[in-house]
Amino acid sequence: MANIAVQRIKREFKEVLKSEETSKNQIKVDLVDENFTELRGEIAGPPDTPYEGGRFQLEIKIPETYPFNPPKVRFITKIWHPNISSVTGAICLDILKDQWAAAMTLRTVLLSLQALLAAAEPDDPQDAVVAHQYKQNPEMFKQTARLWGHYYGGAPVPGPEYTRKIDKLTAMGFEKDAVIAALSSKSWDVETATELLLSN
Image 1: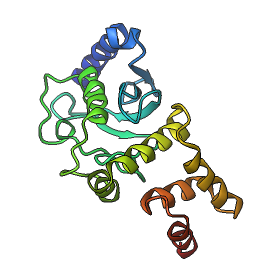
Image 2: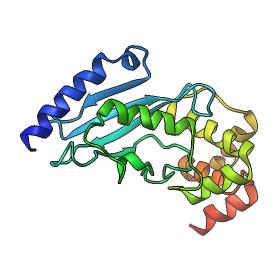
Image 3: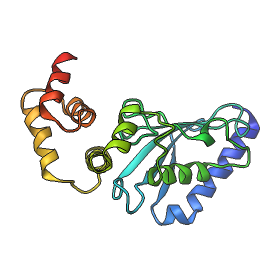
Image 4: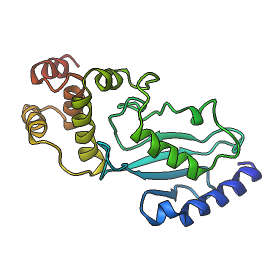
């Protein structure tokens, strides 16, 4: 990796470690490899959101051309959010694309992602199914996001009726991740979710 990129990332890595947000356990960053090309980020689910209490892991890949091009970031922890793919973890956020500026840092990226969890942009979705639910049935979206936050991010347990539906379908022999995805995309209707699971 180019020397400028390495020096810059080392400095930003230290900035995150010393930040107030890290001391408050809101953001975190770890090295994956010694040459600073791949990092592991973590953000806490913001308060007063369905993600509250959860912790969400991020894969951060630093390009050779950093800081003139943005890092490549995706969610490793599965999450139910209009601007994040529920399948791949890909993120739709302007600063990770065309609105990136060389003055931005790892800390601003992590804080921007935390802000995205608190303020979704359903009209510019990464996941159309989630965005549709967000707009058409906000209460169901919140419950679904809470449930994903519990199962994948360690957030507190959501309502028991959702858990019962998951248990019912996993008892039929379906894999838990597939069951959660099917129920989430079919508005928690067991019958249509079962049809979807059987068709795959």
